[in-house]
Every structure is written in C-alpha cells, then in structure tokens.
Image (tube, rainbow over all chains, first blue to last red):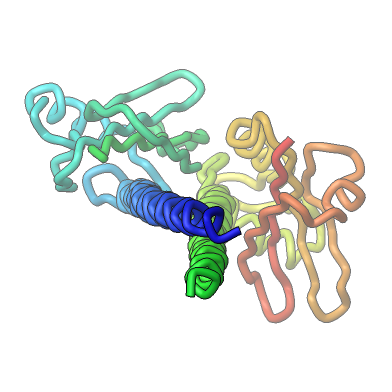
Length: 145
Length: 166
C-alpha cells in the first residue's frame, strides 16, 4: 500500500494543476467573449441613436419623423460631392462609417458607405407637391471590433 | 505521513473542482445577465418600442388633401365617427382615417401584424380603426412578441398601435 500512495498523490496533484489551468483558461475566454458582446451591444445603441438623429436632422426633415423630399435631394447632391463624409450628411458628424438608406415605394436614396448591423425606422416623406408617403429609413453602421 | 499527504491532495483536488465550478457558475450568471440586459433593454425596450413609437408619430403627420392625420383624429373624436367631415378652406371633405392609416401601415409593416385603435382607459372600451387581420383581439391577446405604442388624445383616451412579428 505504501508504494502505491506516492504515485497516486503525484497523479492527483498533476490532475489538480491541469484542471486549475483549464478553469483559468476557460474563465479568460468567457471574459473575452463578454467584452466582445458588450462592444456589439454598443453598436446597436449607436445605430439606434444615429437613426433618431436622422429622424430629426434639420438638413433632412421638417420636424420629427417628417422627411422633406427637397432637403433630401439637396443632401444627396452634397453627398455626391463629399464622398469622404462618413455619414454623407452635412448636418450630422460621425467618427465611424454609417450608411443610411431612405426608401419609399418609388424612390431610394443612399448616403454613406458601410457594412454591418442594420436597423430600420418608420417615417413619412413630405413630397414636393405637398403630399405625404410612408418611408423606411435603414441605418447600417460599421464598427471595427 | 504519506496517507496524510494523499488526503491533502484529494482535498485540494476537490477544492479546485468546487472553486472552478463556482467561478464558472458566476461567470455564466454574469454572461446570461448581460444577455438579458442586452435583449430586454436594448432590443425589446429600445429597438422594438422605438420602432412602434416612431411609426405612430409618423402616422400622425400623414396628410391627405392637406389635412394631417392628427387633425382628423380630433374631428373624429368630436364627430364620433371614423370618417369625419372636415372643411379644408375650400370644400368639405370626408377624411377616412382607415384609408390613410392603411396606406402607411401596410407599407411599414408589410411582414408584421398590426392593430390600430382608440382606447378609453376609464371604461376599458376600444374602437378599432384598422387591423391587418380580422380578429385582432384574439391575435394580440397573447402578449408575447407584442409591441405597443400609444399617444394620449384626451384624458383617459388614447390612440394605440400594437405590432406583432409574423
């Protein structure tokens, strides 16, 4: 029995060290994953906040939720001559690339260039003839992780 | 002495496993709690509710013959009809709340179900303006997946929009 105890003790200690190392590595992986997900949640918040800014931007709307066709056309001209603007709008400034798509039944405008998570917002578009039509704004943000 | 060392090894082994399980459990709770916060607060509370709220606020600004939906709502309440008669400065028009709401909601919620209605919170009565399906009470009785937005029209009286993903 005495000759049997020493190798068993050594074996259990080695097993303890291996399991301890596995737990430490596993914990580090979970913490890293947690931090990554927190960052992704931030992207969603950025998109939502940017969308709300678009909905009340003075260069695009007449008031909250009412997009103005004339202003959008003017902003589109601005974007065509300022392709380096990260969001494509003269009255909004962002530090990350954001793409905005304004879509109605028969028209679509695209501002900025980005690939990533997207978010859609309902709005209406006040046309140049004074009538209104429903519109959907899609915001796409590109955030380096 | 060697038996004592073996016992200590076994105890340290068990302790390592127990502490490891505790740490994993704690991190698991933190991770799930974080997902719960992200899903509940950011996705459901911010994303979906802001979507329905923006839809309702946009609908209020929809115009037909120069008359906004919100103005027509006031006439509708006063005349107690969903097709109020409104004078637009030139002639008297019949404004159909249902037609204007349909034009907007059918486009915005092509792939979702919706229910737009007046609600009286003191009598708990409601009056449907428009819904995507014929029996909205049954459809929206299951609150899971429902998103609600409302605007007050007068004391105890609201315009309410329910949206549910198909």
